[in-house]
Length: 82
Image (cartoon, rainbow, N blue to C red; front, side, top):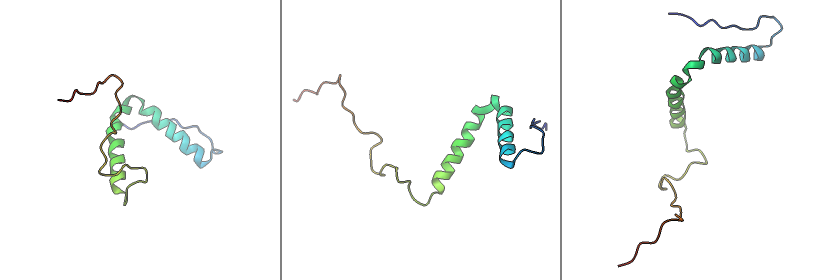
């Protein structure tokens, strides 16, 4: 298995936050060609986070609401009555 060589700026005067930010940028640069492969991972993590909540978030729609509200169609004509 081959490791990833990360190039971090050398120096003792870097603070912990600056070093963490430099490490984050180096990791993003190393994964540049594989961002699409991480999409299912983050979607699954979001699903796991959502289902781990104890209650619905305040902005969530009610459970019995339709998926979308019917919008008026400007090109639709009313159906003729029989």
